[in-house]
Length: 185
Image (cartoon, rainbow, N blue to C red; front, top):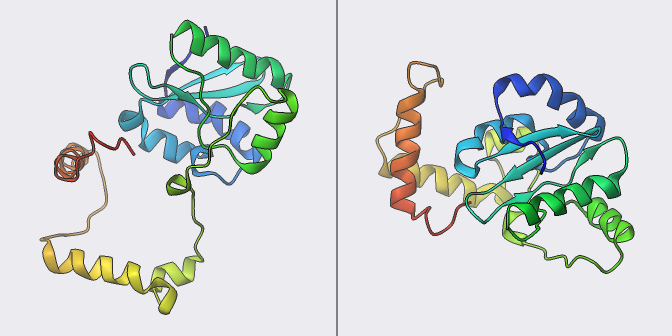
C-alpha cells in the first residue's frame, strides 16, 4: 500500500519541485488548491519511487491524480492500482489532462476506459478581463456578482488565524443550503 498521509503545509517544501518540474495546467496540480480543499476532499499525498502521488475522496470513493515525477511511470501507476485494490476501492484517476490520457493509454493499451466530465473542466481567463468583468462575454459573471451583492449582507476581509473558524462555519452553512452532500464538488 502507498504510504499516503493528509496533506500538510510542511509538505509544500517537497511537493512544489514536483509541480514546477511537471508544469501542468490543471488546477489539481497546484499545492494551494490541494491544501485548501484538503478537508472537503480528504486529500492525501505520498512521495514514492521518485513520484508525487495524490489520493482524494472519502470512504470507498477514492480517486488518484495521475502521478508526476521521474522514474518508471508504468510501475508508478501499477502501485496506485495495487493501492486501490488493497483499499477495496475501484481504481480511478481524476483530473487527467489530454497528454496524460494519451500516455496512460500507450502504457496500458486498452486497459482503461476514459470518461470526460465537462462540468469539471478548468477554465482560464485573462486576468485583466476577469478583474474588470468588462465586455459581453463576462456579462453572466457580472450578473451573479450583482445578485449576490443585492441579496446578501456581506463584507470582505483577509482570512487570518483569528477568523478561519468563522470561514469554515460559513462554508459549512453554505454547503447545507446548497445541498453539498448530494454533490461533493
